[in-house]
Length: 155
Image 1 (spheres, rainbow, N blue to C red):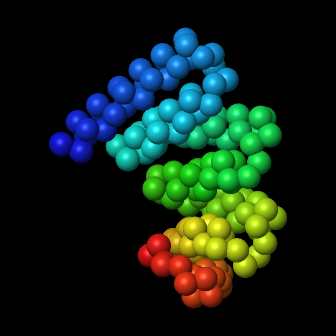
Image 2 (cartoon, rainbow, N blue to C red):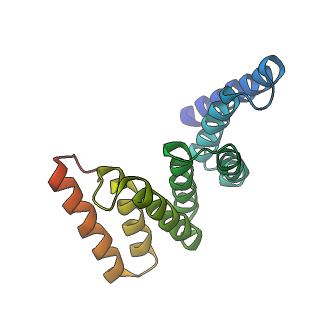
């Protein structure tokens, strides 16, 4: 119950911040995107995936429309994958994992440590879908990148 009340308090905080920022700075201000990101995260933590989904989709659309290539848009793809994974919509999660991985490979190269999260997420989702051989390939690739860069695994 305590987590729920804390989430509800955070929800109210972010909803109010969005309202105030829109009045003060206009709807295109970058603070609104940040606050929407946090609001979607609160919804997701509360398990209210249906409320988080349109926010995450709108953030991706807005970032792409504003030339938001790079880490912001790439992060949006992975956040959508996490949302659908947590929601149990593994087919949609797989789609966004693959998009995230493809875009990160284009941006950073095929052996970049910035691929690790996308590789791990894709491996996890594929395993949930019963695609164990493919999941193992992505997990190995993740582990190889982590080992080569000395990163700590997010497992």
